[in-house]
Amino acid sequence: MVVSPGVTQAYQMTNSSATKLNDTTYLFTIEYQLGSVKFDIAAPIGAVRSGEADTPYLNYSLVQDEAGQLIGGSSAALVLSTAQVQGTDYFVPKGEARRFTLFALLSFAETPQLDEIQLQVTKLPFTLTAEGTTQQNVLSSGELQSYITPKVE
Image (tube, rainbow, N blue to C red; front, top):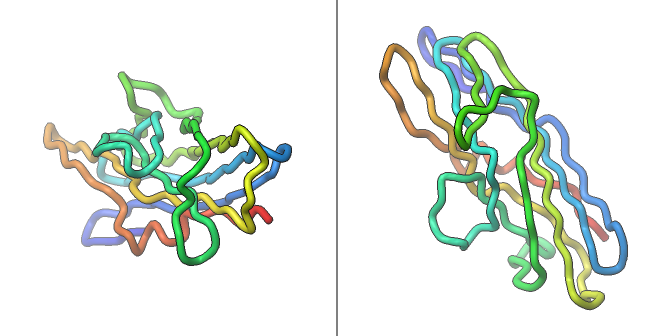
């Protein structure tokens, strides 16, 4: 939670999972909550793998062990929520909070030779709006450290 004079905002990861569906396919989920007392929030529906150009979407990396990023495989992801949709974003009115779930699938053409795989959110952008003023934001790298799934082994 971020607290400043007169403003309380909640950005927290609440749950995560990593599941091996079969020898070539993995499912990752990260649940989080966004809300603010003073600001309306717009948060992206879309999600892309990090390194796919700078985008306004949530970015994630697939990492193998503590050291490196997973290069192979193809992935697809989407953020789901019961929050109202406005354009290409979810809308959270001021004074309220909403839950969001990132779903990401990773697949390989053949069984990969991997030990452990995790999904890490690397960029979570959102827009704050109050009294006609709009401010683009992202969670800091420190705040994003908890936005990681358990290891699939």
